[in-house]
Length: 230
Image (cartoon, rainbow, N blue to C red; front, top):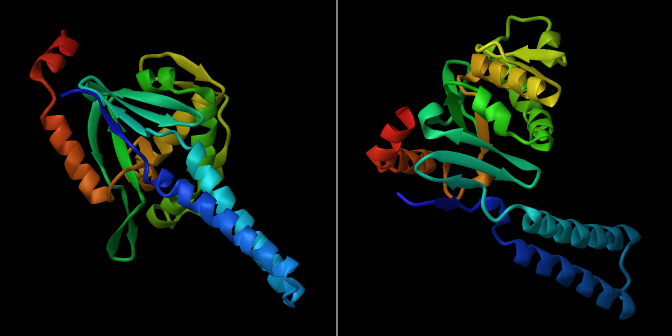
């Protein structure tokens, strides 16, 4: 198995959105210069729509062209704010996380990775990405708490900022690494996974992606795994 690059769906049609935004603005200016009588609210709506569509296209363009880099040794998540890296031999399982909604299970728009040892991930993640993920996943934590621990009256401890984090090996982490480590522990407790990659960062539907990842895992050269164990 050679290096595999996953291109995020979030970048899809980026140029088309930019062109559409410019087109809406051009049409709006043409109508204005041509003297078309439209209510002020309509003019404002057209200007806002053109700006929103154009900025959405720009946001898609600035996303990294590759979201996941998969090799026989590691899985690396790429984001415009940094990256984290997970060894295949440190990966216990992956799947779509689910929460209870009444008597049924509801899939969340992520693929989750359960990790054996978080220390290598904590050592690899960039501080900017750690801060971003903690902030981005607040709604994920909130949804998990409401559905998995509805009996709790106070969720404050889950949102406290830790001073430090002690790994099972005894190594101490502080700052954003500690904050990210604690958040991973909380999500593991509630949803069963440590790391989460949003569906928008993938190139196919979640179920298909998990099946494809399982095939990639099975195709890893045995020799690579043996080398790592030695």
